[in-house]
Length: 72
Image 1 (cartoon, one colour):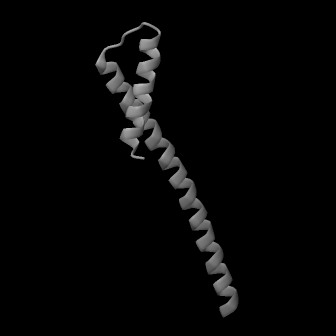
Image 2 (cartoon, rainbow, N blue to C red):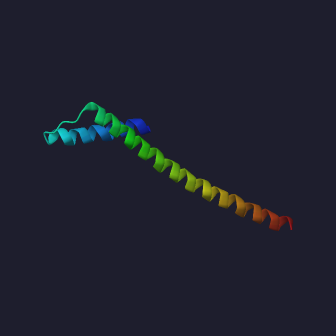
Image 3 (tube, helix red, strand yellow):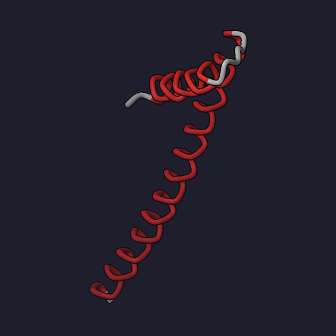
């Protein structure tokens, strides 16, 4: 699912909860909520990708060490 679509769905569900409680917020607040949710998703993805990159870097180092032993 696309990040922005997912953020929109979360904001829409939040809107339902607010309106079911007989409250109202301006549309601009929901748009800002969508942006905040999307930014949070982006941050989580970047952190996950950085962890994967670190693992790949360590694996590459290990493979090079093994290759050096075979040459040795």
